[in-house]
Image (cartoon, rainbow, N blue to C red; front, top):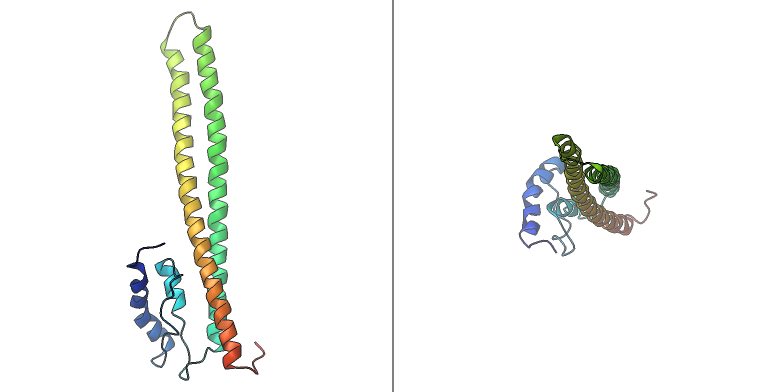
Length: 173
């Protein structure tokens, strides 16, 4: 659960939205408890017409927002998967390099600086793999957050579509 201070921040965006939609708009409802992040909260502040009804344009806008968030979540997930694959390749390379360095040390009669070179290279590759793993985890967490926001936006869009059909029963949208 996100701390309480995130929810009130969404109301900061209302004046900007009101300017874009015109002076007659009002928030449809207060920010619900399932609102997870400020971005998701701003999607909740959908506007209605002067009679308080959800128009076709607002419903379409909500659908477009949900689709955009879903596309962004998919792209973030693909990025995270690519980073994880690269981290796996680096980890396997680091393991091979470590085995090679250990094998060289076992076969060597004398310890020399050339033996250190192979182990240093294995360490660098291992550190690179660790950094990629950290990036992959961060990207995966971002993708998870975008998935939550996308699901929230989809739920909001579905709610607005239902309200639109209730407000305009003869609508063919």
